[in-house]
Image (cartoon, rainbow, N blue to C red; front, side, top):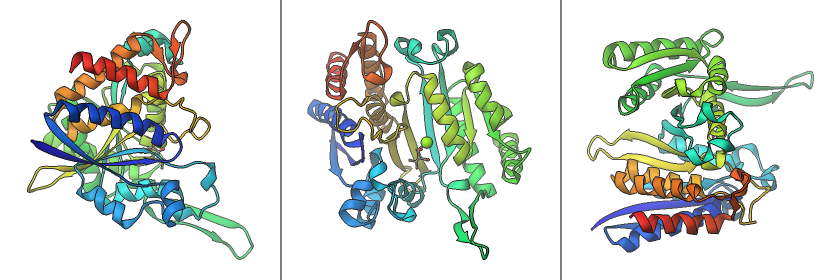
Length: 369
Ligand code: IPM
Ligand code: MG
């Protein structure tokens, strides 16, 4: 029997609550007995800081490297507002992304038919929406050096973030964009700010060169990142794959999330390059939503993004596309039954909490799988 090793990193806030529902889905597939998921749980973010003084330990990073997939909850919260900048909860996630070289972040934004009303946009604009934001995840403003705050002689302070990209970093994410588009609607929008940023010029030229050489079969459009933000709310269905740098991807993916009704719905996958020997990619799967400290511990959080992230792990790390489809279908059916967590609540629907949403999805799953 095939064994897949999963490292679970629930983190902070609602992370542990939504991860508990993921664990129930994992147990469901273990009980089916076709494959075996071996899970291990470790601390990350503020929880790790409280226990060990760092937002992720070397030991946890080593486990993440060795796992077939990491399933991540969420990090951060007001409790850790005062910890040193380099030890803040988010630094744990950033270190995992960097050390595992997870350069390709896939953030699908799919609007379930049952949720078209929950979006702040009109139904006809979002119904049937299926776009993919591909965010470069290990470069750009997030990691560029210098990144510092200094006090000047006159007592004023000066802070610097640096945006850096090299051609290989852009080439490899462009290739992923074209590959993904080939399995979808064959269209890539590359978003940058070439009118202001020199990294935008290099981004534009490099994506164009990869397209010329390797991907003429895919349609490529260039779009300024600010115009892309505008078009995403004007006419989101014009897009298929949007590829962009780390910082623009952070923002555009939050924006795209709201098109789907709630950020509580969106999963994501962060992938490394395939290992030349085994073909396996390092991978981390996480809901796009954050730790939501305001509702943490109350059993109110929407576990759908976390469960859908596990489905992405099945698809991209475990070669279990069928089971991933089954989870996605179970989620759609659950929504179709009118069950909603608070974040996606609508008139005439039944509001339930985290656990009941998990149970409903499991029921639907049992009926399908
Ligand atoms: C995300 C989050 C993270 C980011 C934070 C938690 C560091 O907003 O995954 O989009 O900015 O990348
Ligand atoms: Mg973000």
